[in-house]
Length: 233
Image 1: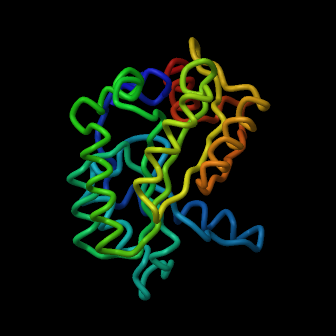
Image 2 (image 1 turned 120 degrees about the vertical axis):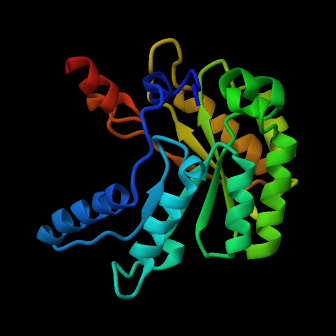
């Protein structure tokens, strides 16, 4: 999808994962966690790739992992994150499954979102939000909006106020602020800036959570490890 702030986008498209490849990732960690007397509690389709551009395989994998005769993980323990592929949101709405939906927003208006997420030209905010409203109407499920905090790009007070106005259009939703792992030209927002940004949103009545940064020392953010390994090969 070629988002400039995302290392995954620099990798280019190779191919879609098969159903078995998706399922095996879960089984691999299930076996690993079993040795630690723990288990897989949630499965998230996010980080690398767009799940709704591999819709059939993703849904079939969820079906297997959700099956009582299979992995038997409850539907509400699955989350799908999308950049806003409207057709995928619509299909998920029709299925009326109890799967969690997350929208990668990352900007409060079309001008900035198109700059950092080229897919916005095809799926502008108005279309995405319309599909989200329909999804909520049909499923009564709360939607998460993801917003990655990038220094001097989308973290101003003005952006916070615009974002609050946008999210207010979707009452059954909440906002998740994500600390950015630096990749080249883009840098993470400072902690105090994130705090101020969050405070503005909360004063506007928005429910906000914050995802903290992990794995920076080993470059574990979306696409970083894969890109590093590919360069070595």
